[in-house]
Image (cartoon, rainbow, N blue to C red; front, side, top):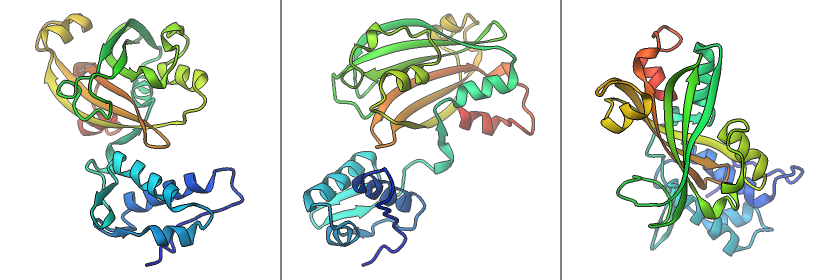
Length: 255
């Protein structure tokens, strides 16, 4: 089997193994490799002979963790993402949405604490059971009005000394990019719905209970497809006038 649509360019600064991971990922996501196609290690060795078999297996194992590839007794097989590609958005999507509708947008850190990861509570988060997380609550103000908040969970082992940083210097993603240059933060996977605000949500947003809010469950990843963030985001649904630019469906995708 040959994968002639793979692109390995040894003149690029990216290492061959990173290029191989990215090119397999893009081929699966674009369905150039159909679901359940065998991914043969010997074929990848022909494509990148400088890589040892063990390194190619490590790359495929990373893709197993990311959900793009499955492992079986007979080797590795391609999968498609469980969530359609249209639900992938850049990290600053919520900020961009607010900036496009309001003159002044501000993110304020209102709480920082340590907690543990509980799989039943933080569904689909790719963290270990009882792993130590730092929880950061962010409130979003637009034209001085509180419109949204998020509870963000980051694995403490990925972000050494993060509790010593000043979280009010720019947005959270800007702070991570500045202080942790070893990571390349890429995109978020977002699932959204409209719900009535609970006692907790209405208390944080300072509105009456059952006020409609957009709820977004957000998972964010590095370019190596390692999850670094899990967030619950709540945005007041009645603060946006829907138009051809932002329909209700489009707004849900952004959140």
